[in-house]
Image (spheres, rainbow, N blue to C red):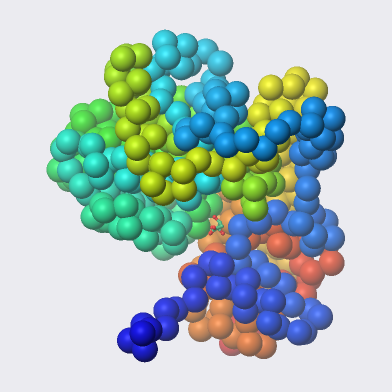
Amino acid sequence: IWSAVPAGPPDPILGVTEAFKADKDPRKINLGVGAYRDENGKPYVLNAVKKAEEILVQQNPDKEYLPITGLPEFTQAAAKLAYGAESVPLNESRVAVTQSISGTGALRIGGAFLGRFYPHTKTIYLPVPSWGNHTPIFRDSGLEVKGYRYFDKKTVGLDFAGLKEDLKNMPEKSIVLLHACAHNPTGVDPTPEQWKEISDIVKEKSLFPFFDMAYQGFASGSTSRDAFAVRHFISEGHQIALSQSFAKNMGLYGERVGAFSIITADPEERARVDSQLKIVIRPMYSNPPLHGARIASTILRNDELYGLWESEVKHMANRIIQMRDRLYANLVDLKTPGEWSHITKQIGMFSFTGLTQPQTKALAEKAHIYMTADGRISMAGLNAKNIDYFSESVSKAVKG
Ligand code: LMR
């Protein structure tokens, strides 16, 4: 029956983990997937998460189905984390929000909802480059995917002039995807001043802003500072859509905890949008999983755990910054050809190194170091034990 099914290529990000696992060399390093690792290169379960789980065990809750849009305590707390306690649309009950299967699920619900109900276009514009999964998610949601300029290879920074020009040239009311903070894969974010200009153009052109916020807390170490763009857009009256993930900032990767929300005009409109979100979700996966949402909601609604969580987010962000400093210093010490200051300028979990595809291939084959083919490395995979080996290997690969 399946003789005509062609073999597909490995996933550009998760496929890297498969290649890493198959490598038996003890020096191997996985810098592919964006998953935090501790000082010893081990996956890290946050203490806030462990404590929340202890509380949950004591509460001994049942395992009944959640409502289609998830655990209400969680979705309310997630929206508050993104929009802020003072948020006007939140306090006016104008935010339709649903739990989602992490960030991917949130984007997919959003894509499907916009595909079905956004009246003006079925085209979404993504930054170039964007997270590798964005294009397939929106394409499979029934949208047409186009790009706008974002990254400048020459400066290894933001192509702000190109970005503005492309936004201005989009058809009015186009859907535009924006990374709220810690842009993946480049680690290059607009400054607050630049965000204000972007917001003005979005307003002028009546564009529809869809924010993807997968790294709240990872850019600056502060969840509220990282929400600047989202909150600024809302204070400017934009009715945004928002995807949130708790994979990175709570380390809940495999628990698949996220939220999708959309700002509406009034509570009556919110109720209608809410009813349609349910109709989008029910045939996809019926209702979301319980455990991770309970963990996140316990942390977000308990002052002590919230404080502990914030300090742990800061710790993770700081460890990554230290690794950036070490890597930069090492590459300079090793007289590696090229300019490497972008390593310390970029923020969030990733560094877009500028390594070429042949160099990344050589690093995998000769040094057992794995990263995505575009030269993105997950900084969290580096630690005191492997950073020197990594730096030397990169230096060798660049020298050829
Ligand atoms: C990444 O970009 O590495 C993460 O967002 C994980 C993923 O699912 O791709």
